[in-house]
Image (cartoon, rainbow over all chains, first blue to last red; front, side, top):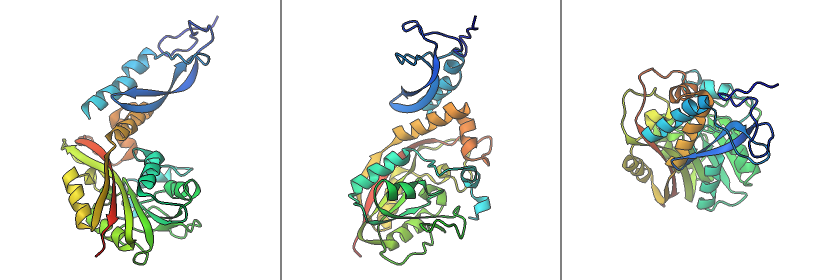
Length: 69
Length: 226
């Protein structure tokens, strides 16, 4: 049985498509600015999973910086 | 500024392939060329061309006869379109280009007025200067090292005055701060933090340097008849 790590998204499965998540390239938009990122997502439906580490780490830093700058 | 003292030397030396390091990247270049009405075959010069990614783009994608100059180009490089030199001393005759580009470059030279004068000298009458750069919205704590774009960024009014004094008539001014923010966000996602991103660009950056609030602009100016 594969280990599931919600913090990284490793081993997680798409709830809609029931396929393993993969690292996919997406474009994130915040405060009218867009930037590319590679995050876990469903290769079939395209829904993404943002792990806690990413949400509280780099993405939070991006939010803070864009709001400040 | 000698290549060894150039804050961008390490950044470009690490590259295995030509790349751009500026907000908007080649898409903003494409827009500038389109707004300027440049057509294939025209002679254009990219001042501060770095590794030549934009020169290759201008030539291969847009069909322009493109040249580039940068202190980071090694003398004797086999790429004849790229020359080693400085914006304030362009090794070209008067009125030899239809357009001259300086993308996120003037602020890094520390000699914007001199570079602009040279750009206008090599521009043909009615030729176009295509300029994008940082502008200062609000000063901040600390200072950036000389030779970096934030160190040379000035206010919108100051930029426009410089362009006018160089003999350029404004055709276009566009705000592209959104592209600057996207550039910063991309850097943070890659490095982990704003500070790490700044250090990846400028290894010589001092710890206290935060800089102010910046914007990014695209300006097109036509060379006025004397």
